[in-house]
Length: 422
Image 1 (tube, rainbow, N blue to C red):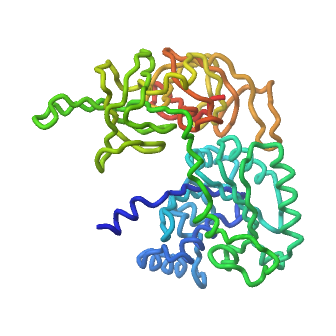
Image 2: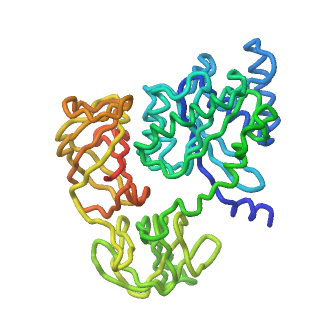
Image 3: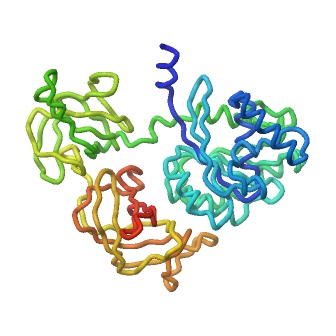
């Protein structure tokens, strides 16, 4: 029992992979799982059978994440593949995202919740347009940490100069972006150099292996623990014999630290109260912080419902119906100027109209195109919207949870865009 509890309490690192086609993303993840003993026997049997059918020798580790038949046939990744594994230090969720330009939306999906992005660069080709595109998206999505893995070093004779040149080129480009924390690792995913174990071929490299970085990188401060934000998802009223008067507000803390006895303000009403208790699945706690899911009770009876937000009186989010967004369009039907969509933000749902399309970004050159305002599948652009009711939000740069939205087509109920509030 204690072993299970220890596993549940382990820190979770979410990371995403990005890179051009055939840079070895799936092979790298396969190598991570294989060398960290995170592959089950039945998976190994399936891998060996798949390799026999393909007439290949040895084990093709890329097949671990390429789950779709069309992916295996072409040897590429098409959809986002999620894999879960754990080491004695941490739990991990990997999002293996596609490299093709037509799957930009898939990378945005996989990267939106990531603590870290693994950007793969082919040692033979160096920093190419696709590398820049993925670095830009990682910067746009405010991923706190980036590990640039310079792969296929075995095909570059493990040459230090090749590594240093790519590192210098990437740093030069990244200086134009908002990237907080960068690490560079020379690896060979195929042979396992510097993935889980140190490479004997690159004694000149004095940094950590990829696994050591993943296990030890500090992610505790990735969440915003300054601005208290608690969107209410559900009001809990058991009205049972044991709890006749219990009234709790459940949801996930999207920022800050809440403690019993704290004064809070309820939006949109503006009423204030004091926190009476904070309850969790495992019992009452004195304090709770992002991203915990809790149930908060207040000392006063206030009319609170889904979509309301508990905040600090002197630290409140912006409240507005007019919002500027960077969006990634995810639907084959193009965005309609002056079109109406459903917007979902934290626990709120409203309707909105697209007031203005300001520009579209050319993700190859990073130039703003103000002439072509046709936003279609996989395009990234800046728009202005007006909602039917005020939303309580922060900028995406300040808080990824309260600064993100999705747009939904009212007719089909399909998610058509993911947005970052500016």
